[in-house]
Length: 234
Image (tube, rainbow, N blue to C red; front, side):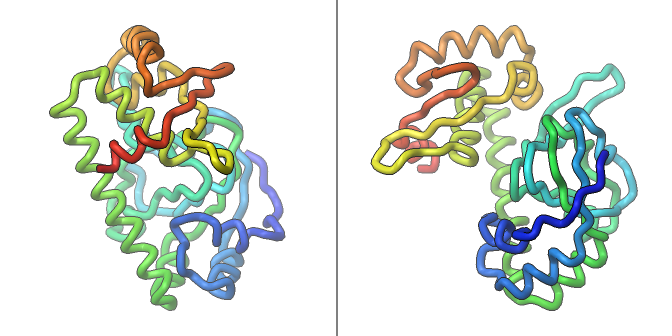
């Protein structure tokens, strides 16, 4: 872990995150003043499942996974967070233990807030309160979708749905293009996320490459038609 200076354009960067939609620049400057910044290497443990309520973290760059694991070491990824992702929030709100273990997937810069200071900031801002409600509502909706996917979908369909979810959240498109491209997680990360093995994911990805939905490019980059994302949302 390496302490870093506050980015000069932090408030502007936060304004671009969907989490803070509608929050004014002065309010974001106030929030930025409460943050401590650290750069964490890949595979750095940030918090453990069952830890007492504590800080709230905002991902500025990089990626963080939230996992659950058992005594045998098997893990399931319950969330993948990129820039604008936030964690530690639920525990800060209810005062109960952390709901999962947070680990960096790659070199990441995080803003760390005292939990009570973050909540005090939201109480002073109606726009921030609205943002908090939207974030919690999004999480409930996402959780229900994940439960339904695991209960009703085949492993292949769960994998495809997960890839489309990542494409919708992280995909980039060029003006006038009718598709988005994104970098998929590793086979192991996908396996942990959908509750299967790396070998099964490898086999299913090979099958999905022959479909019209996934169009593999160089390395782990995949292109997906926008129409597939629209159908998923419907």
